[in-house]
Length: 213
Image (cartoon, rainbow, N blue to C red; front, top):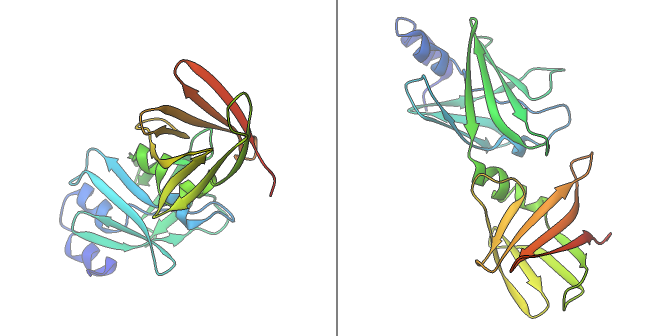
């Protein structure tokens, strides 16, 4: 692995874009008390020497891979969703109305870049899937409950005698496809917790609420 300081010194004579990247431009920060897993994913950027930045949890540290370069990010104390990279750049992860990170904003020397997170990862990563796990009491269906669980790192549904794997729907938050037979969506409350399940099948809509365990 190439060390950040070494990469920076080697590429000091390179283009500004390359310097930004290799000095850790892609830093990710957790909000105060947030889970580092909130930021794990692949971000697509433009205007830079590579198209994607992969952010991961490596030994409990927020780690990035940008092209051939990689390194760890350092949290900026007191600033939500913000990290520093060797003091040369800051990155702020931005959240949507559902409270999920959907992009990263990169700032250095007056320049700003944005990287969009993979929509499928936002809705259906193994980390995010745990948001939906639980038992839901349904209305106007042949069965009383829908149970969602994790199985082989996928969201698994049991509804009466029916069961199977749910697939995240591209470019839609909190929405899944149930084997082409139904669409299952979720809504959230002000605390970003799931408060309703909505099942759309054959032109009909059925709703359910989480059962308190």
